[in-house]
Image (cartoon, rainbow, N blue to C red; front, side, top):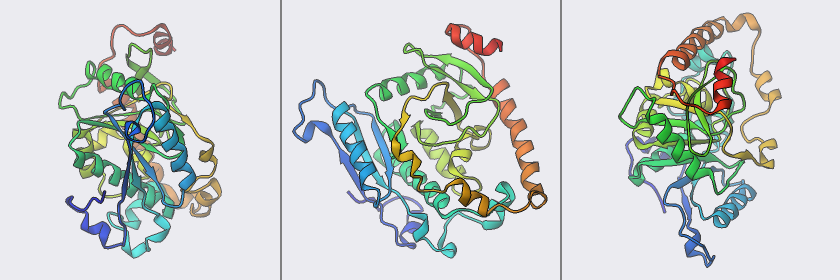
Amino acid sequence: MLISAFSGMDEYWSVGVVLMLERVEPTKVGVEMAMPASPLRIYVINLDRCTERWARMRSQAIQFGLNIVRVAAIDGHSVDDEQRVGFHPRSFYFHNGRTILAGEYGCYRSHLLALETFVLSGESMAIVVEDDVDLNPGLIPRAVEAVSAVSAVSSVKSGGRVIKLANHRKVGFRALASTVHGDVVGRCRHGPQGSAACYIVTRQAALNLLQTMDTMLLPFDVALERGWSTGVETFSTEDNLVEFSPHRRDTTIGKRAHYRAVKPHFMLRITTHWFRVHDQMRRWFYATWACHKMEHLPSSARTQQAN
């Protein structure tokens, strides 16, 4: 299936990128299922060259009865600097204190393509994952319950919400709601938390993110967390709802050595330090005061709050 009709998509054709989708529906490939595949789709961002990653996720989708859609990721290394859309080098340097990695650009635009694909589907909710996580049968019901739980504490009733379901760090986590499965949902007072490997997003949130994040100022995982900037009610689960697969070691974005190579001396990053201090203050306020905590939380969550 080929996607060609979406506002702003002409920019992608100009850099020679073709978005191809492949859907896996377990009930149609001869696999006996106790029940039909889940109606909630999981959009998997996958580079064409990473065939082993896609094969692993496809196999898991069939095993667990999940309806997944492959979104062909943009390879940032195949896009020349002058052909990058929605990107201004000086603005990125101001916010990050370094130049961008090609893999970061590809990752950012690939997530926006996944969100665009979801919006085009007309569905009300979807999960977006990167191809270095392992799927599991409890992912969808637990993620949907997390969305329902935060509805009681959200200050916005429009349905525009995103919940990160996988993070590298959760410092200063503030529990706000809990689900019947025992998952605790909240916000972190300190960040960035790292990773955009798995998140559930509503249609209104996707529309808002596509507008507010059209210009790349930060890596996608950092930008996604900034609900105070995007206007989307943003949360995280205390525990990851997915595990990272062995492919995580073979990152397609960049390793620490690559980041160090593009980072200048400390004194040449003064604007970035100022931005991060200011952003941290806004993050703390967003996590502490921007929504109400539920009165009844699991004992583990109450202990977390007391500390």
